[in-house]
Length: 195
Image 1: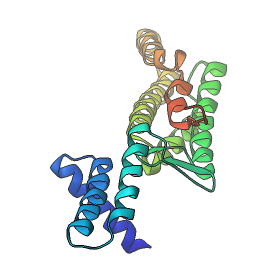
Image 2: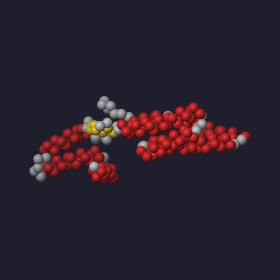
Image 3: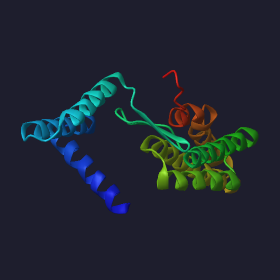
Image 4: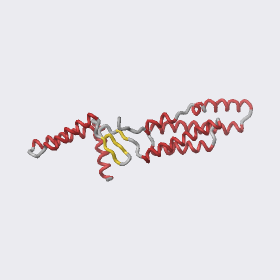
């Protein structure tokens, strides 16, 4: 199975490099095979009918494959998350929301909430789309900066303390208006039968 997956990935890379979508490459291979069979006197008629049906399904976007809890729209390659992938996204979103809730409750970044956010960022780096990774990287770096400023505020006095408080407030504007659900929503979309 691993060899088949490797071969399929190599084919995808090859067709991507020459600029042909995999959809058209597969359909072209089916068509050429049917023509080859017909020209050399083999029974290519049945295969030709299959090729024609594939072309029709491809352009009407009707060819869908359903396997366990994952549905793939074969020709356009739309994919719904599996149950495990969905749980991963939900857990990651839950951690980000927990950080946000803790921030709104305290109005500053606590060590515990920073750890939760760092864990979410680490999980995202391992297996999430680039947009979520970039979003969490920005949040983590900003939260760390805010946390260390909070530590300095505890030790500072006078004008230095006021300046640090202003700096912390400016940094924390990012956390005031967080809307992580907007970013995660598109990755947890479920394709309905109507689509």
